[in-house]
Image (cartoon, rainbow, N blue to C red; front, side, top):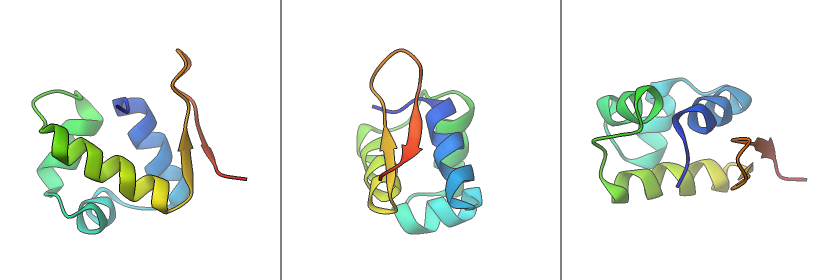
Length: 73
């Protein structure tokens, strides 16, 4: 999965607000807020939707320990 830090960084790289991400991922604003602030108490399906939405927009996540995020080349 993705971390709160990765989610915030990816959204910032895309210039999206929390509401933009929620609308595109078809999740609630409060879900995005919970993902970005704690990463807990969120359905796996919501996390997957957010990740797929960010990846479809060109974000690439690193699964290493550094919480890396970058735009796909």
